[in-house]
Image (cartoon, protein in one colour):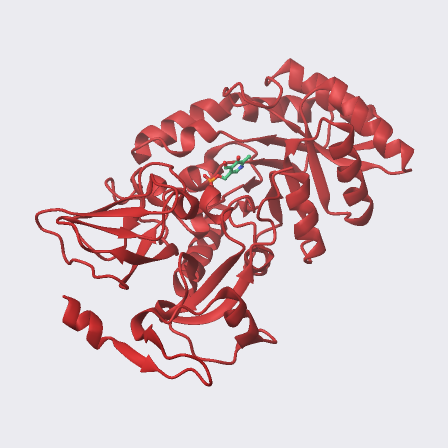
Length: 413
Ligand SMILES: Cc1ncc(COP(=O)(O)O)c(C=O)c1O
C-alpha cells in the first residue's frame, strides 16, 4: 500500500543541495561504493545485501563453502580428483578457494580465461577447448612459456602439428591432452584407433609433451533421474575408457584422464581410469540443474545448494496479479527454465524483456510486492548469467563480506 511505502521513506537533507527522498529499504549502494568499503580484503562498512543497488549478482558464502566441502568429500570418498571448470564462475577468488580445498587445478574453456586465471595466481590450468587459429595458438604458447602447469587440448593431427611448430619456434615443449569425443560429435577425435593415432603423433612431435586424455560427456549432465543419468554416462564414456587402456597398452604414459561434470560427479569415478572430474556448476547451482533430480531426491537435485542469486528491485506494482522488476534478459539471460524466486511459493518470474522482469502471482502466492521491494532469484543457468556481471557480492548472513571481480567476464576468445 502506498502509505506503508511512504512510511519506509526518510527525508534526507543533502548538504547544500536540494532535499531528496531516499527510500531506506532501497538504499542502493553502488559497486563503486562497495569497492571503496572493501579495503585489504575486509569490508569497512556494514552493508546488508538488501541495500545493494540492483540488479546485483550475489553468492551466499555459507552455501558456496558447503558446496566446495561436499564436492571434496565425495571426491575423497570415491578416490578421484576434482579439476573444476572455471568457465562457470570466471572468478579467480573462487578458483583459489577450489584449489585451497583440494582441487588439483582448474579447467578453462578459452585461452583468454586461462590468461586471466594465471595473471591472478592460478597455476594449474587445463584448457578444454582446442586452439585452431594462429592468434590463439600463439597466445596459448605464450602462456605455456610462463605457466608450466598449463595443459591444452588437441583433437586432430593437423592441429597437433601446428601446436608443435608454434612450440618449437619458441624452444618450448608444450603439454597436451587428446580430446576424445564421447559420442556428442561436437569436439574431439573419435575414440579407439583415431585417438591412438593422434596420441602417438603428439607423443612424437618435438614441440609437444603427451599428458593424456580429456573426454567431456556434456549430453549426460542434465539427464533427469539419477539411474538414467548413470546408465547413459557410463555407456557414453565406455569407449573413452577403452581408448585410455589402448593408449596405455601401446606404451604411452598418461597421467590425465579428465571428464565429467556436476550432473555426474558421483558417477564419474565408475569410469575406468578417470583421474579427475571437471565440475563447474556445483559451486553455484541453477534452476536447470535443480530440475534433474539426484540420487537421494528424485524431484530436486539437492546435492548442492543454490548459492548464486540475482537481487532485483520491484519497479511497478500497479497491475493486478503481477509486478515488474529491474532484472530482465540483460540481468538474467533468457535461458530456461526461468529464474526461481527464492524463498517464495507460487510466484513465477520471467526475464524475457531486455530491462524488465515479470513477477506473476499464483492463487497461493506467498506474498505480493510493492515498488522498491527487493527479491532474490535463483539463476536459470549459472555460466551465462555470471558472464553478464563485472562483480559478485559475497554475502554471509545477509551482510556483504566481500566484492569479487569476475575477472574472466567476457573472456570468450
Ligand atoms: C568441457 C567441459 N567440462 C566441464 C563442464 C562443466 O559442466 P557442469 O557445469 O555441468 O559441471 C563443461 C560445461 O559445459 C564443459 O564444457
